[in-house]
Length: 171
Image (cartoon, rainbow, N blue to C red; front, side, top):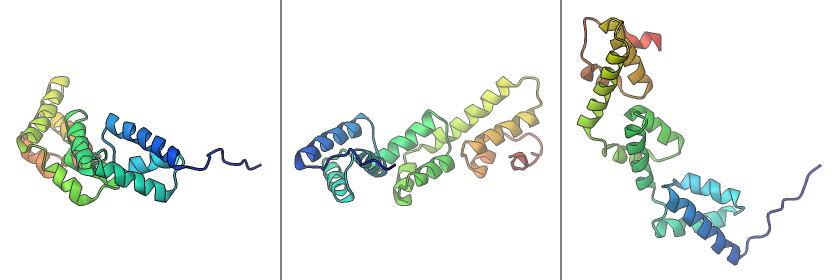
């Protein structure tokens, strides 16, 4: 049996309340427009009201897509040790325009990026002391590749021992 929706009609007073809720939602953490739109849908607004509220939030600088993308790029890289490819794929799933993603990727320091890959490699070397250096290299390569670091960056950063079996065969 179908039930009637319990969402009441939205008045201008309710829009002010919803705006305040969304403003708190956005100031707690950087949000994308998609996240804000889905939250507004949960609060019961229609598309016209959502559009107006989002325009106000953008005008008040509560929602800033480039700031959101920049914080995601830095956070995913520094805390989760993701590479550029994985970060880019994640942001594209969030429906972020590729131009904003490319601009935000410039925030990453190339030397810091390479150092992160090398640190992960060194961690693998110390984690597996009884395994040959070639096997450690292959394991580290596979791990870095799964984390979203590009093939060329990995090959240029990890010190090569002999000839690598193609590590991508095992992925």
